[in-house]
Image (cartoon, rainbow, N blue to C red):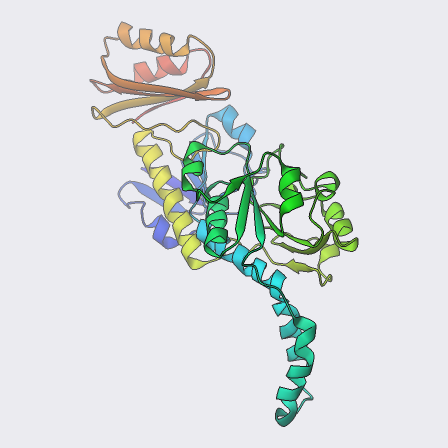
Length: 388
């Protein structure tokens, strides 16, 4: 029976995928086969020797020690696209709040407690001019990062009558197919910053994107633009943002990751990490995370991993082994020679690699013996081996 340890509050609609006759699911298991989590930080937590997979019910994985997982052969999954609509709708809300000064108007109206009902209409007419806004239709939206969320946001901009430009040097073919043909590709960050009235960020927090919105980038921004960050705090240099707001280069900044210095500013719309905080998004992320773990534990297939290659092999027999190894030459050949020496016939196989790791699925004509599993596990550079 597989053991699944949960952290945070994982939607029950996702956990219900774990059948009671095959899985034990609890938050206190000491030797889990897999972890399911949302925002819990694992960096200072011990990783059990039994652990084979970690699934993040969300997109970002900066709360998971990826290097340590790679060393131990632990597959890390995320759920790209499961919360895309929730973030897209929040980005739309933020653009409208930036353009129409709705928050300020509401706050002002709430303070009119001493105005009598008979004079309320006249009072509102007198103050409404100070909250005059602008429309987003016809404006230019720049989308930085065109993955599942960024593509949704870009297409939404087209539907709203905006001009949309996008920048993503690492865009995948799959992501490109999701984009409207009306979206214009920008060759660099600086040209996008200079052209757009609204700029929204949708890139992961990795070394290449840390502080990508800095003094140099903001020096190119179109004066009076609004910047939206519902991706990750680390993407923006907070001091550079404050200076850009102070000197009027940026008109407004909407973010899910405010710093203390931003909280009292009227030109900042601070939010408490609301991007994926909808019932629907939490359900979608939980379902996807749990289904990916099940497929991996039961069949060895990998989809949406951030540290392992994607791989899927339909079973040709009931007997399957998988193994993880350092991505060096000769390991697979050595394993195949062991199979031959033990007279175990291979019916199908697949091998893929990603960075320093290689992953292998091999279907066998007969069950894998303890002797076979032990022999493969002793091959140099093999990290983990399983019989499924």
